[in-house]
Image (cartoon, rainbow, N blue to C red; front, side):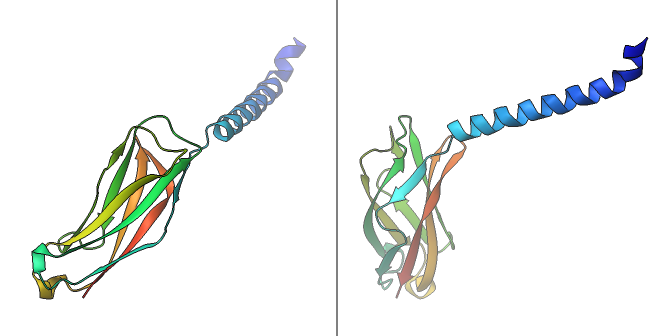
Length: 147
């Protein structure tokens, strides 16, 4: 049988064809399923305040963000800070039913968690827009200065 003689070659050709079709399908799905970007009106953002009151000291700044393209499902904001034992970073609202096309305004607050002498310094915070397990870039960089 001549087909038996060429069967390994045919199987290799079939495997290569399937790989090409799979790569093309993946490329098309990635292009159509692009992750939205987070657009911040001010990035980086600076918060500066006196830490003389120790744990009762705080400073705030306003910012706004939207997603492009707009997202019609819920998004969450996650905060982080370089020294979470010394300072906290919070936002007025961490959940939004949708994101974009208009900017959503929020207030970002940094608060001392320790005594005045321990709180003094410079910290870096970030605010990230999430939808499920997807992160929208870029994150908001927050420079915190406590004097």
